Length: 148
Ligand code: DQA
Image (tube, rainbow, N blue to C red; front, top):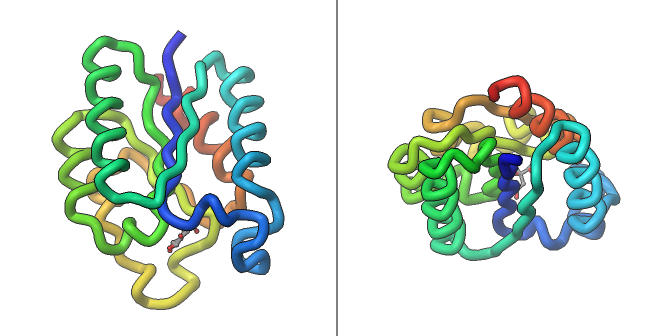
């Protein structure tokens, strides 16, 4: 069974209380449960993580690259939070590993402030998901299944 690695970046640990009008009222633990159900339905093992640190995300992408090389990775779903709009390091890490990666945002970043319109992740991603709320995570898992 291949693994779907779902990575969450800064401030996503605050889901549930953070700007609920934008991100909804479900917590990160709720999102993990939703991902667990989606992965079971699609025949993936789930590895679900969150960090507030850019370098940790880079390390986890390298880890994903090693799993990919062994044929054990279905792909990565990455909500890089604000690092989406700033991080050349994440862009380079994705490109350097050859992994299949779906960029995910809970909100529709293109309907928000202009500084959220540019993504360093998108040019290195296989697909982009934005604006479906936390249900986007389940949709991205199904999308990943369709890419196998
Ligand atoms: C986000 C959108 C980003 O612009 C923001 O910095 C986040 C969350 C989203 O899921 O909608 O932290 O990635």
